[in-house]
Image (tube, helix red, strand yellow):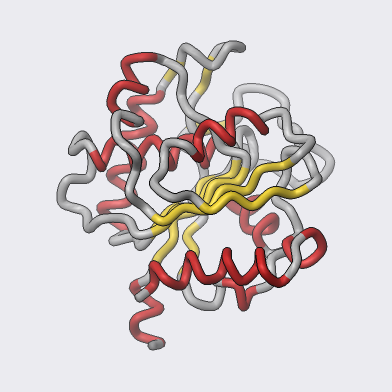
Length: 217
């Protein structure tokens, strides 16, 4: 099992204007027995340095990064193709990866990669991804992207954390509909990684763990 564990990599994509190290800190609040002990987690930084103020300034030290840029309506994107190309190269050189995990912009991007791969647009030589964890993710809104990425239900085991006070609550719910048989775990907080042990009973923790570990075998 130890040798197998070394091959079970999860690519973890951080949120807008944060960093891989910050996402690693966010995820560290979860009970490791849920799945952290079973996978090798990889936390790369975004392709671009933060182009403005970060929401975590004064909470977590810089540097901060972003994967791509976008307009207020989230309908126009800058450097998205460069970001996708960069991530595909990273996955090819550092994989194979068993699955993806993302927070906010990272979750939105991770779902896009899964949808594109399902349609044969990217990562054609990479083995199928087996699982996806979305925390406060959303769909892209540009029609030409949606017509490809969300054309069919994405057949990957997925878990979607959705906060009652999250400004991305409705977009997160919409993203979950892009997946086949998604597991939705709701929490009472906002735009954050929830503390599972605090907000969820054993049934939810078991369902989360079962979904991920079921993809492991």
